[in-house]
Length: 256
Length: 360
Image (cartoon, rainbow over all chains, first blue to last red; front, side):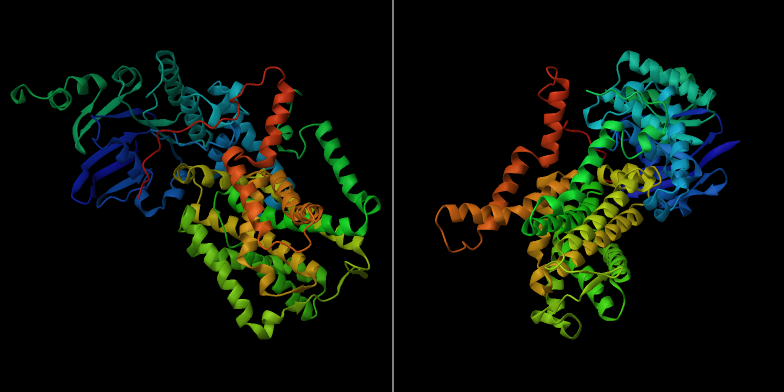
């Protein structure tokens, strides 16, 4: 059953067509990757799903609901969480607080209850912290729990961002280049985590990634984009050997 | 250095991390309660003044330190809090109702003002709120039938539970009243910080785009922050006007806003302690300066000296200690706790070279 569907989605910035009549569907429980050269529109697709951009035409549905009717801050309430290509964490807060912001969509108490710190708030806080602790355990973030983001190395921040998205207990996880800038070992870890996120947590993953080694190891299906349009779709192997993909990355013989 | 072995989630939620910290703050509270027996009436008045400034500072700190929105318009909310409290009292409401009600009115109006103003960012928001402060100055003059205009207004007699609170005949009562207000405001502030709302404030401050991606409604969060901030500052303003006994538009000029912002920067942005340390600096600076000028044999007051000295202090802090007084204390404490293992750059902010392109 398809969880996320894009139908004929087009986005234009002035004269530039960033996404051109793109259709794709992500099935529940799979790991789906978007690949393509720089500027192909992969991150733009993510921003469309997050509702930061509104397409000029087309439909985006998540679990049967029309995403385009929602403002960006209500998208997470459906169970969509994401990371950013360039890491957008809350720099002056601790790792714990960052992950707790991930729990924002699960909050139940109102402002007045919070001002007086009523028992309901205390109960809710404990539940949030328990959920966050599971994520910390899963991603081995214990040594950094009370450290501020501003002092953490890049690789750890990358993991914290995945953790923040996981803390919201999403159904669909959007990972924007989860392995960019990571060392070989860190990429290896990320691979196991993505596998576990799918298998143990049952979360569907849609990712943008340049590292074809990682993509071919964790993904069920891959969609190749170039200039905002679909080039090829299929298993990692099929896409990698597709002539249109090869020409988009390497150029054609004629041009030389 | 104390190591905390955490055995429950409550350890991170409760107000004090351990018994030692709880003891320190209880000792501080005991000292504050005993203050009227320890110092004379003049200094008790000064202490009251510090606490009033701290209340106003906590209001602005919530907005600027926690939510990252600079405001130069908080003198307007001080005025609003003061006039609404006094007008309610003149309408016959007892102080104990008029005072919190004045704060709530200010908070609601502050939130309403925030809805258009918060579309602006950074320095533009500062300029817009500065305009609000200057406008309020004029409005007070224009609304003379209610505000008394330039002639000002006399503070009505405050009676709380049958006790008359007068700063001359009963300075201790005034001091205790202010102390209770500060304690309640500080407790609310702390409660917010350990609840989802406080974390949403910090999220908006550090990255609006990812706050939104986590389900934080930016406009609503900012409006709430502005409203709560205005409300707290309104309470502080009411205390300030009542403590001054006579107040007019000059009591709440935009200079006060600027002083308030300087105060929280010098104290330490984003720390509750910062509001208090800044309040001590701003309340005692005029006294300190007059003592210095007196000892230098000058008998006439030098106009603008106070503002100039404050400006210099502000520049020095921004250049050499952007974390303010409380940040300096944190550094010293870390140095002592870790001695001799503290490193020089432990508090250095890492530069971020990559930022997600601003969408829209």
